[in-house]
Image 1 (spheres, one colour):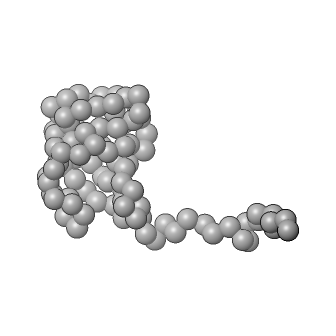
Image 2 (spheres, rainbow, N blue to C red; image 1 turned 90 degrees about the vertical axis):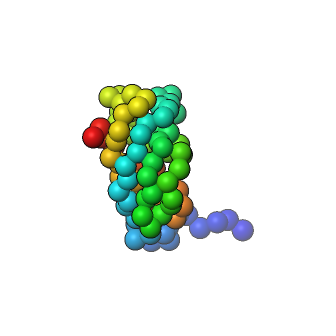
Image 3 (tube, one colour; image 1 turned 30 degrees about the horizontal axis):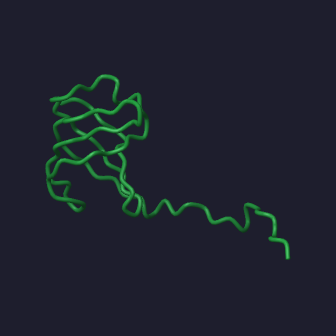
Length: 92
């Protein structure tokens, strides 16, 4: 039996209500321009995670162009049901 054709009416739209934004502060420890990620030694991100060193993907690789290892940064982390990525980052 053939599957019904996908239409806007029967495809569930992403649930944006589950996406949360968190402010963070940290120090850049590694930058990967090829895959678009930055590793940060970050302070506690209240409501999400304790302080740690962690690598995050970024929503746009161009955000990494002016960063260098050792920079102190403020960032906005998007959490979509456990999938995290940085959507804004700037030097302090």
